[in-house]
Image (cartoon, rainbow, N blue to C red; front, top):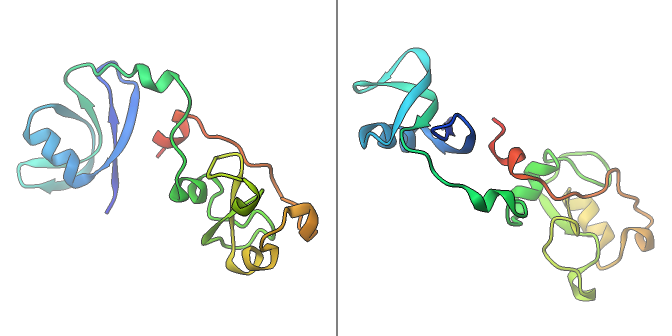
Length: 147
C-alpha cells in the first residue's frame, strides 16, 4: 500500500500514513487534500498523495533528539545495504556486541547481511577484520518524513 505525506496546517511535514488512514482523516474532516493522483478516487474522495491538517498541531517534541531506535529504522537508514560487504541486508548487527555491553542505539547498530553478521559473530569489526563501509549515525526527524 502506498504512503501519504501529512503536512501540518503551516505546511511543515509531520509524518507519513497509509492511504486508508489518510481517507479516514478526510472523512473526519481533520485534513484536506493538497495533492492527489489524477483520475483515481476512493469513494467520493480523490486518492491523496499529500494531505494537510486543518488545525495546527504543536510538535515541540520534534525539536529534541531524533526518532527512537528500531530495527526497521536501522535497515531504512542504511538503505537495506550491508555495512560490511555492501550487499543486500536483512539483519541488524551490533558494532559493539550486546554481550560486551553494546546497546540498541543508532550509533551501535548497522544493517548487515546474514553471512557477514554470522561471520562477525561476537566480536568487534576490528577483531573480526571486517571494517565498516560507513559509520553509523543517528537520523533526524527530517529523514523519517522524506517520501
